[in-house]
Length: 230
Length: 230
DNA sequence: ACCGCTTTGTGCACGAGTTCACAATCGGGT
DNA sequence: ACCCGATTGTGAACTCGTGCACAAAGCGGT
Image (cartoon, rainbow over all chains, first blue to last red; front, top):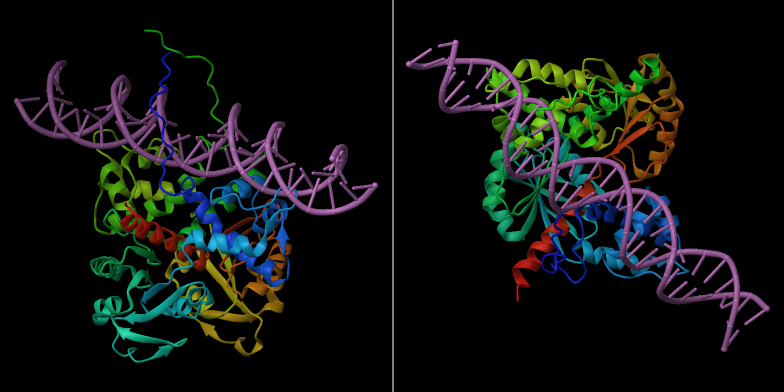
């Protein structure tokens, strides 16, 4: 059995610390929200135990996650809440400013425009965009509704880097292509389609129907177990 | 040539086939949607190559996923579209009927009520529920708006098994507790809080703010790479 | 009846993510 | 100054998910 020791194994030196894993990145926003809550309540320090409980994860996982951004935290004491809030914000890139455009002013686009999370934490909605000229000129939650023909102009003007697709499925790929064509490299897709994009573009999808079907699977499994134990 | 017959090695006989993994379950709805599209276009059979491309995954992964539900598919040919649709539906439990209650008739509740995915594929929205009595009596997308005080009655009457929480964060845990108290064992949570639930209850969360923050992280990483190559 | 082309199903190795357990380290009390 | 309880940071084992590569298996043409 030949063991390949090889050269250095270089641990992907992309950042100062070892690159933050995808799974960790997905949890950081949760920690951030919980910590903000603690800060508002006047809590100065938290232990990994407490924070983990509030975030719904195990303490070990939380510590490992946080260790990837640096060695903040004091042994025997815990983490300083405000300092950690800042560090996580910085790691996530929330100290920068991002312009977002929401395409599709249906029920969902409406809901997204009013969603508090979009306005806060460094995100600003540059415009709501729709194909229906009848809606153009409206103002929803303080945001102008513009026509989709102006998409390119809006993106250039506001330096939009994130596009949110809340259109019907049939229009989603077209809209996505246009966003990508304007240099948008991050897309949040609510339409129930698999978007085709070039390599360097990040797409995250949120699909309500899929979530429901996953729940249905577990429901079925539960009822099978409870009935079919014989 | 020694054929190992041995004793069955029983592969975790929880179901007829080896239990389907969580990652696979999350992809099955995507396959299902793509296949439905193919069926509507009159396509009779698909290869793993074609289906994988349309679903945005690798062919090997797709084949392994499908192999977990059984050995459907013909070598040298591919998969029969309609048959596969049926098998995936059955595996996901979509051949059964599920009643859903949506709590919170804000912008998001509105959007969810109108969302096509809820009405189709075995799901039926029993009622929209809100704390605001002024809204009670409305009909949205053919669904009655009822008061949250009637929650227990509605759940019992319609045998609701899935609850959707689209309330403000402050009300989410209360609503969740009441749902669980009525025997609901699956919850889809849109409120930006970590819900505490007993062991046997499944919670899936959808958090728009988190998705945006993840995109922000990748945006930042991209700009760091392009600038800081030195 | 056979051959060759195509495509599935899967064993295997690899990598990513999780959990455990513990040494290293800090603050506070005496 | 020292000790003790508390808590972090992390090495190491383990589980889970992914991708490769290929044998098994079907179909159609000759």
